[in-house]
Length: 207
Image (cartoon, rainbow, N blue to C red; front, side, top):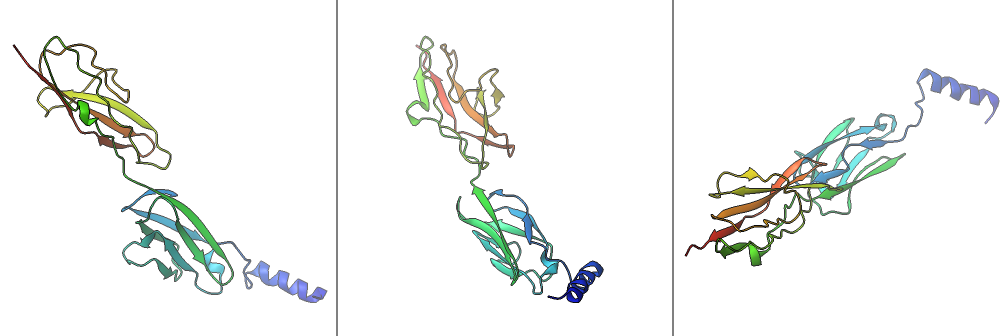
């Protein structure tokens, strides 16, 4: 390319007649739950000579029930994620550029299940209940962190937090004088979602 042509290109770029190439970028949530619509934004698609195409792996464009569309100049769109935990992505591509955003899909929070062997205990007033064992919580976030809080109820209706009982399992530690019900509340701190386990019951046999 001779000097005159180089100067001409520089002038065209400076004046905006010939746009500078810019990479397509996709921004939006990368940790999501299935069945919820999440919004994503595209930048850089206006410089392509053709309309870029959006394709979803593991989900569909919200409101369209399809996994591929032309952008038509749009800068944002919503996706309903339906796939498993891996292989989910958004790809925006044109004849001159392409970019992919990988997305992790996590399930809703599973608060755990109480061990069926000790779910119901029938005891006298002199016997200490067995430790109530509850499985670990799962789901709720791609990088979950859980807070446990045990609750008790005298009639299986009104539940009250047990002070200091924040471990995975519950040790009651002394005999009971009346029947009681117990369950575990789980809070996933990243998404601030809450789940409640099933209940354990301790019935008292009087003589």
